[in-house]
Length: 253
Image 1 (cartoon, rainbow, N blue to C red):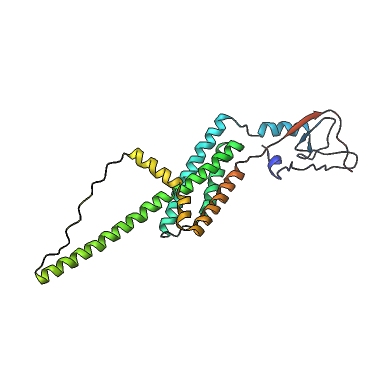
Image 2 (image 1 turned 180 degrees about the vertical axis):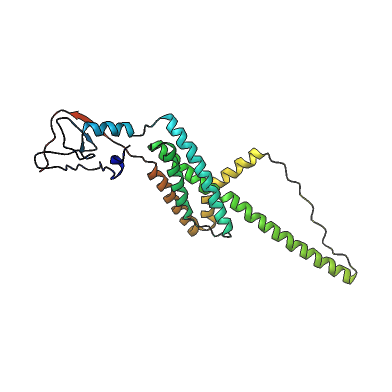
């Protein structure tokens, strides 16, 4: 669209009849109206501006939705990685407000991919991607801290074994504690592991709720706000165009 349609942005939510006494002006270009006019969301618009609005309005096509989906998935992956990295770098102090940022990134990316097209299916997709990105981010966070705890446990066990061995050498006795038998775990395919991890991640907000109800509830609430932001961004802008009408519009009082 030209600058005249973006600065200032036309507001079509309410009828505004600007003009001189005895005549009306187009709500978009502010030029005097002729004998033919249209109504765009209750605002009077001239035929020329209606054609420009129609030409510049984004069309909801399958291709537009596919592009929006691809952009949204990419943004969700970026949000997931960013969420997990920040949580790990802050040593487990997860700032739940990052859920809002993830929702904004996903919604904005989808609108960019669709060239401004929005609608219900875009909103549902954006909300789902936001939830998936935030919830599955718990998996790399859990893996990181589980690895740290396992390393700490190994260090503690090694110290205990060294102390026990040293005590046995001093007394001439061998430690009575036999080495723990090694348990062989069944091999799991990568696809099975990823599927289980994804399901566990999607359930993570409710798992945290059962662990600590207060902080879990706060996390769910903020996640809901992030999904709501993505929902609002992808709503799009709709123009309801009526006309043409052959008679001149009534003059403003």
